[in-house]
Length: 449
Image (tube, rainbow, N blue to C red; front, side, top):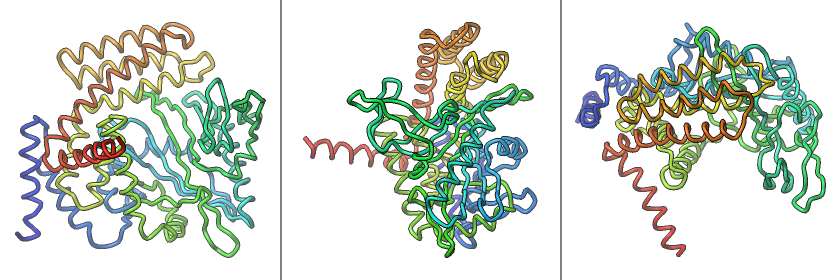
């Protein structure tokens, strides 16, 4: 079979499966994608869109649409870190579903990823510079008319630590609230009941997983979103060597960089990415797929990871099929599930997000469900959301509100799970891929018994 005919053969298999499921599929667009990704095997890994001023891995760029670029850049100005010539260099990117805007019509969150390279004489100086700029960013963006900082991940617990009645194991990431950052320490207890304190500067010496989370409001669109910035921080020593502060330099297979001006720092850093980065990245994604199809069942999250695995490893038929699922009306519920959490994050008497905005977002959630579902399931989820909406009229975050949030999210996720489970298993090759993880789990359980 000649190579030029292969995309059409693959497409026919996808069309047959989609037709059986009633999935709407744009045949011409799917064929264009199959042809484009097949052609992407050759040439440079990085593609630059000179018109829009963005760049990224050639496979990721196929799924990015500039339609909402102005919106993402606007939020990017809130979450990004500033360059400091000769001291701090940065490159901000979209990641996750936000970077796949051509196919994920209903992205759950606004996820960002930022490479931060700190030039310093010693690793300790680099860590303290990171502590300084993260503290400054947290205090500057604590709250405003259209945003509110929710938490900061910075540092790891050096020993078991009890906070708010919860025991956190040694090595787990430290979650900081703004009040903790302002006083420069987290107070709690050791498991034996003795008081314990971890200072911000102490956490800086082993920064580990660094991430910042906000809720942002868009009054014009009448919507809220969770905006996160995951930081990949490196130290550049006087001899030019590059060292990741968390011990691992992240690959670049899922990011769309928002400013062409950051190409020099991006190019300098990715030279140090492991030569086995793609294999390691796929292995990590497969561990997550395994978790979501055998233990913590979540076929929506599994589908997102499978798509990245398939499109990066040449399994284009499977990738093209999963790609179409993200544009189905029922997948709007993924956004609904995420936004219920977003409302929960900011329903507080001290919130800077107006209560009217939360009410409007709740209205939009109900309309999203009505447009994406029909029949008994629609009525059931709308009923839960109406209860949630009524609870918004009450003050505070009481037990009843928390119960409504948990039930509504669980019901929405149940529908999302069923949707992806049925459709992923409709394509024989994907069904076998999922079954391979489940068989392995069963063998391990039998062997361990």
